[in-house]
Image 1 (spheres, helix red, strand yellow):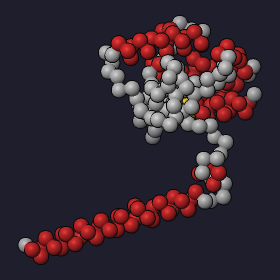
Image 2 (cartoon, helix red, strand yellow):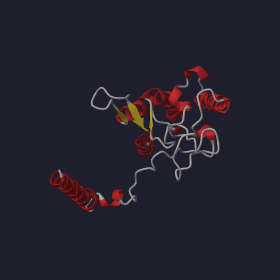
Image 3 (cartoon, one colour):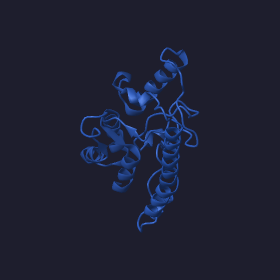
Image 4 (cartoon, helix red, strand yellow):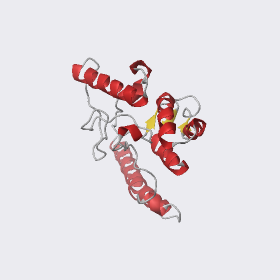
Length: 195
């Protein structure tokens, strides 16, 4: 019995040491090495030209708003943002919270006014903050709602803006998991390039 216990403890220690070396030393070195491949260095160090994930552009003049907007952030001072990207987290308010319901109603009214639609036409993800508060993706419905405004302000044809939205849309994971999403930083970078 004691021999068996020693053998199992020895095997357990060996597994611990092997996985500590693999996961704590080898894997981080491999990831670091891949980030040094020419062409990846700038984006691996955060100096690429990709927009900051989750940062919602707030124009100085709301009537001349040329960008698509992300979901609201629970960390923002204003009802619609911009969010504080140095923090991440939801509001942790329950569905029956009057404060949360008031915030959702304010967001719905402001988005409906910005997009020139009835409040009932505003999709749920436009008013509900994501769990992290800095989600870069929106639903295709929310992107479609914003397409007319973006086309009008940028002067791009609506069909071109719709094609840009389609290019930034990702389908379901593995074809059946989750819902289709639109990546807003990718979308806004394409809109800026097309102007």
